[in-house]
Length: 151
Image 1 (tube, helix red, strand yellow):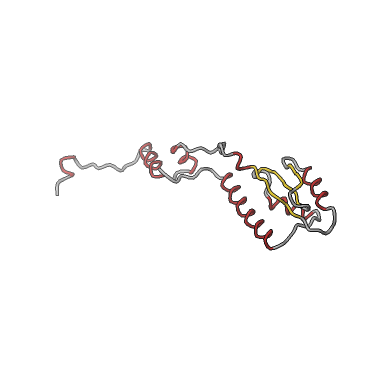
Image 2 (image 1 turned 30 degrees about the vertical axis):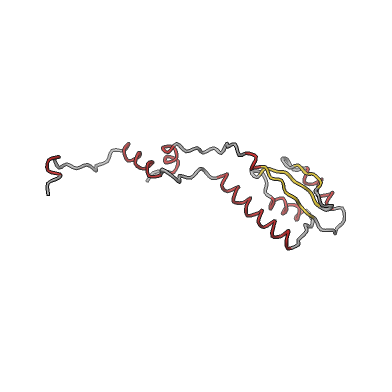
């Protein structure tokens, strides 16, 4: 059985993901906080700004923050979990819960796709044909050419 790495090399596939879409890895998200306890938005801004690779700005809403991070380092879910563990309370209205759940799913899928190698979607049969041609095998007909077509 052929190893996947060998198949990728024979097909000429890349393993690195240095693509021109690097801007897609940068995420800008809004975090909204509950009204109580007071001043938690400012304390959360200070706490988040201490994380390397995270920039924090005041949001459009009075109790919101705009965070910018790389999907390869953080996810919205991990930032929210960290804030929750530190005692901060996010706004849990139904609309915001649905939005956050969608963002969590999208970021998890994008992160999985970025960290996995490129898939062999097309030309996968050619890889195995090339490998078969390069290896000695006993699959040849010993019958003389003039007798092969005899019926």
